[in-house]
Length: 297
Image (cartoon, rainbow, N blue to C red):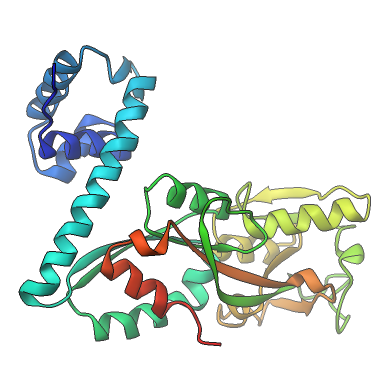
């Protein structure tokens, strides 16, 4: 027996997963929650499988639901490609590009790059989300994003990878810290102190952990935060030292209360990479933005 899907129900299904619940999915799709619930129940009855495990705290995907999500996202990407290509013929280039990027790229480089691209292609819409580098690679591999910008020390198997930019990492500490008078530092001196760290799995934390392991030392995270502003505030109060991109701290306006000290190791010159699935299979708008974000040699 053949099964017929309608695209709206598949979009509703994806929205429930991405918004982690029917209520927020209803808000996003502007459909009554009761209508969404009925569509999902009807689709489960048609398929003969449960797509979600429902419990008091929400809804989790079943294995069948995870399989449907993978195919539904692939279908959505194919539909987006079809729409973009037809739109080129109808009224000029139009499309949606989903980007996930790490904090460093968003704060240092990406805004200016997007301004110049969108000035050139005003019919293209960009959806930008922030993520940690391992999560960015997974999002692109799972077709939850079209392009990812991440710390180049994180592996990206089975994806096409291009160099985007690079940044230099420096140590930050409060004025008056024991290391503040040094013109530069080896990481071996920094690792003796408590750290203020970003999220687990971030590119910078991964580099620091590897550097500490190479010295046969353990990193000492005292406080963990979700952004550079919070990191700078914690460092200012003396809760630990941090490692951040030089340009981020320079443009933060915090150097009246913080000291930024260069680190001498080669790994502190960090590549930022751009990853994508097979470039020739990408929608035109995605391909154009990928080319725009790839520096000319």
